[in-house]
Length: 358
Ligand code: IDC
Picture: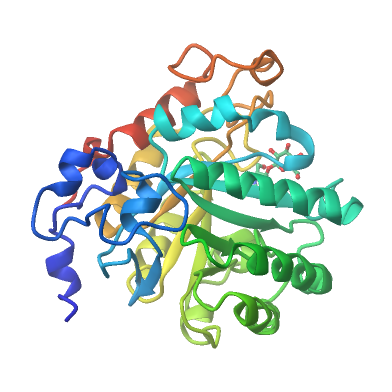
């Protein structure tokens, strides 16, 4: 029998998956999952993906294989077509073992030189990155990074082909998440919902169990950037089970109005923050760590999973590595190669206890 969420929220893994990287902590407490009980297909023991296994949406939370709400924290790649060289055995070892990330978001742009230019090559690269994340015990969040044009229906045919192959190949894995629309923009919620309701059955025909994440209107702002709000989604949800809605924010651009929307929405619908930055919406400019901390406090308290943009050495302030790091092959661990946003976010992933949980 499932315990009420209020009880679970005060449970032993309150601060998130980061705490259970240690096998000692994993074994403590009556509700702590055991790595040996039901290991995932191929993630190594005592890793986030092995311990927590297949995820499932439970009410407005994301739960592990034992039905316990969990919070994933991790990093998004930059566009694979531009910064694929930042995703190596060494950098992903560091992401899993030094940053203690639970999840890698694999950001597959559709346009701008991405998937549409060579579906075979980009699909193969995503297969490879899923295997690399799995081998390190991380969840792999496959991000269909449509952006321009903003209407996801423009890419529906491509999305069906791509996700059919991904879902067929990886359905035996228990560490996947599918994000079917990065940031719909210039398009109404009802059109996004229609896209989701056409694509989701195609994915489910191959893989009935992997949670599916759906972008929201206004660049995944739950409608706020369009002058609307989350009630569009709450009042007209996608007709499918085991799905979540995505919210993105850039702390130096998106203040109280966005924070309040996340707080309200996450009481009513399952929300996953698949992308955020500590800087402006351009992914550049000054960091606002104070505002980011408000978001992270909220997400820690409500167990909202999050992924930071981005794990590359692009010149912009939101790319965690200094320019030149990826071509030089590191150093990947520690803070020597990191920009200020990288130092800060690495700490937030490594040390979940930094945040109050009340
Ligand atoms: C930015 C990249 C930049 C690229 C631009 C357009 O950092 O190199 O030229 O996209 O593709 C998002 C998007 C994400 C953006 C990011 C920062 O999901 O693709 O990356 N951002 O602008 N939404 C809000 C911010």
